[in-house]
Image (cartoon, rainbow, N blue to C red; front, side, top):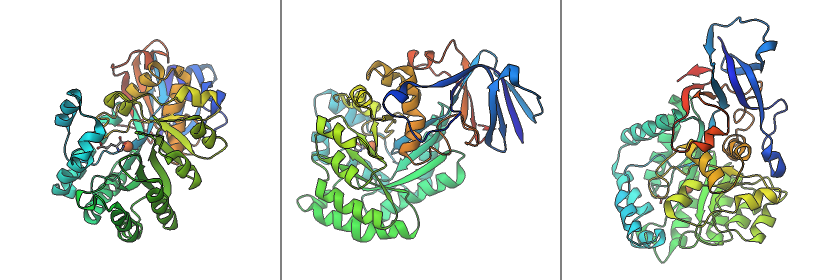
Length: 411
Ligand code: NIG
Ligand code: FE
């Protein structure tokens, strides 16, 4: 099956020499071809170039993209979309002055979601997560990482991970799963949380590994949640069972999360609202992708992660949605792209790299997706008629995506 997309006003995010990620000054480099074509064969990108160089139009299907731009699909490397209930009442509590930590302390927050999620069946959770997934696909997302973490009991965590497995099996989206048993401390373990850490290590991780349910192991390493010591123990156990670390760090405080993540070779450390010079230094020369979650900082009114400073220091930066009911109830990556530019002062080129190639890297799939390159999956979207690629972050709040293709097939 061959699909030809022709007369593309501008084909953006192409790579003639594919890279696994972009860092520092490279992030400002975004290759694009004006008046372009894109040829897809058997779900993969076969060729692309200028229309004047298109030799033959021998394809089963031709898509005319006159006046429209084509971009590689967004990769969203940090989400929690398997959950049962929304949490708008806590949202109102926050407006009235309670902090995220105060709500968590009184048993709200993650524990509130865990209670509702425990009561839902696997089928119900699957249906709800699928609806969220389909929603973001139509906004341009083509690859996504999904965490467990609203279970917090062995049975419930396994249920969530099985839902993610089912999404992997049934959806055309590229999906990676992340076991986040250490997301919150259940009420009955308050005051002796090391016993909950023991449960995660001795019972949950072996069972998760037995069923091959997780690509990654995650910990919410932060003030009021899991300590650096807890995190180190859990990461070691996960690594032993073949899971790669990918952690929540430095959202509430300079917690040592970045350092412990780097020490255990985390593929990414995420949040990073609280970063000192030592954290930036510590990330230099490592394989770990600093990942900023603009939706969470926006929703909780947190200080902004110093993304600009990290790029200027030569680091790579990825930006993901953190789609979850408590701190970012939206998975709209077009909005993340706008926030990257407006709030974090990334240029459109840097912001596009941060939400495609670098997020692909942060979920271990940048050989397959994240740019328009020969041999990669044909995951891309065609915009509505728009003037330029800068319009994408500029026109915030507007859906600029008209048609979505995953593995070469229109969704
Ligand atoms: O990434 N920070 C920890 N976990 C989620 C929030 C989860 C929740 O509040 O439900 C996050 O922001
Ligand atoms: Fe998160």
